[in-house]
Amino acid sequence: MTALAQTSHVAGRHLRWFIRQPWFVGSALIQPIIWLLLFGALFQNVARIPGFSTSATYLDYLVPGVLVMTALFSCGWSGMSIVEDLDRAIIDRLLTTPIHRTAIIAGLNVYELVAFGIQAAIIGGLALLLGARFEGGVLGYAALTACAMLVGATVAAFSDALALVLRTRESVIGINTLLTLPLTFLSAAFMPLALAPDWIATAARFNPVNWAVEAGREALMANPDWSFVAPRLVGLAILAILATAWATSTFRAYQRSI
Amino acid sequence: MTERHGSPSIEATGLVKRYPPDVLALDGLSLSVAPGSIFGLLGPNGAGKSTTVKILTTLARPDGGTARVAGHDVLRHPDRVRRAIGVVGQRSATDQGATGREHLALQGRLFGLSGAALRSRSEELLAAFDLADAADRLVSTWSGGMRRKLDVAMGLVHRPTSLFLDEPTTGLDPEARHELWREIAALSRDGVTVLLTTHYLEEAERLAARVAIVDHGRVVAEGTPDGLKAELRGDAVHVELRSPSDAPGAAAVIERLNGFGRPALDGGRLSARTDHAASSVPAILTALDGAGIAVAAVTVARPSLDDVYFSHTGRAYRPETAEVSR
Image (cartoon, rainbow over all chains, first blue to last red; front, side):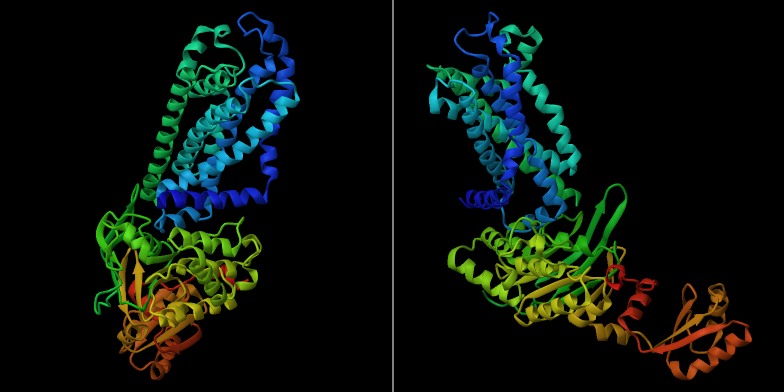
C-alpha cells in the first residue's frame, strides 16, 4: 500500500515536470507522424501484394506498428531521467528516505506510460484523419495501446537499469539506437511475416515487440480473436514486471559502488 | 519515546570501506555522538568524511565494522534508521523543475506525512529558513544559498532525531554561510543531534561541541575544540623565510635551540611549538641570523584548531576556498 502511494508521489513529480513543458510530448510525436504520413504514403501499394489481408489499406496495417515503435522509442529515453537524478544527487536523497526502491522505478514508468498514452491518443486521431479505419473501435485501440504500453514499460525499466549501472547519457542513447529499429524490423510492424524471409519470421516469434504488434493488430480487427491477444498480453506483462524487478535490483549494485 | 541518557545517538565502530581496485577510504573509523549535540568531522577532501556519512545514512555499506544510528543497526535495520534521520548530502539534491514547496511536499509524503500536517510543517520550515517568499517559484530560479537551505529543510521535514550534514556550506558565500550556521546552531537547541562534516576549521569551531579530525580514513584526534587545543603544549611560533630553499637549514637551527621540538615545514614557512613563545623570538632571530638565513616574518600564536590539525596529520590545513575568495 505504501509502495503504491509512493509510486504515485514519484510519478506525480515527473508528471508535474511534464505539465510544465508540454511541448515535450510534441517532439516525441514528430517521428510517428513522419512514419504515418511519408512511410504510409510511400508504401501504400504494398498492401496489394498477395499475403496482405484484402480489406485493409496499408495505413490500417501500419498504425499498430508505428504505435508500438513509438512506445519503444519514447519509453527508451526513461533512463535519461535516472541519469539526471543521479547527477543532481536526487537518487541519493531518495535512497536515504524510507521509499520502497520499486516506487522509484515504477513511478518513473507510470509517468512514461501516461506521456505515451497521450501520444497514442494523438496518433490514433491523426490516423483517423488520414483515413485509417479501426474496425475494433475504441476498445480495440485501447487494447493495442495497452500492448504498446507493456512493451514501453519493459523498455523503460531496461533503460533505467542501464542508467543505474552505467550512469551515462551515452548508454541510454546507445540502447535506444541499438534496440529500437532492429526490434521493430524483426517484427510484423511494417510487413506481414508471411512475406518476410524465414529467419526474420523465426526471430519475430521470440520478439516481444512482435507479440505487441500482432496482438494489437488483432485487437483492432472487427472480430478479434481474444485467445490470440490474451497470451501475448500476459507474456508482455510478465516481461514488464521482470524488467521492473531487475531495474529495482540495480539500486543494490549502485549502492555497492558508492 | 524514553530518553536514554548516556547511549549515543550515532555510534560507529571500526568502519572499513574499500573501493576497487585499491582505495581504502575508511580504515577502522570510530566515533560516538551524544544525543542533541553537534559533532564535527573535520578533514581534507578524500579523508573519508563523506564515506562515513554515506554509511551512517544507509546509502553505502561498510566492508567492516558496525554502526548504530538512533538505536538501530545501519546494516540490519536500514529502514528504521532512514525513518529516524535527516540527510543533507554534499551536493544540493534539488529538482530544477519543481518549486520549493513541492520539494518539501514530496519529501514529507515519502515519510508518510499528508494533508494539513504536511502543509503546516512545510509552512513552518519555509518560514524558519526564510524561504516563504520564494516557495512557489521553480528552484531553478533560486540562489545556491537558498537551495542549500531547502536541502536542510527537506532533511528536517519529518522531524528526525538525527541530522547529517555533509559539507553544508561548501561553495556558499560568507553571508549565506553565516546564515546557515545560525540555523544549524538553532537545531541543536531544539534537541536534534547533528553530525556535520566540513573542511572549514572555523565552521567546526563555531558549531561543534565535539570535533573529530579524520585523516586517511581514521580518526586521528577527537575532543572538544578547546580540549584539543589545550592538549597542544605551549604556543606556536611561525617563521617565514625569504627563500624557501633555506627551510631545511633553518629547521635544523631551530631544533638545536632549547625548548623547541622539530619544526614542521610548509614551503618557506616553519612552525614550531614552545612553552614561552614570545620570549624565544629573539633567540630564534639571533640563531637564524648567525646561520645567514634571512627571515621575512615571525609570528606567535595561541594554538588554533589549525595547529591541532597540523600536529595530528603533519600537513597544513588548506581548505578549498577558491570558490569563495573570488
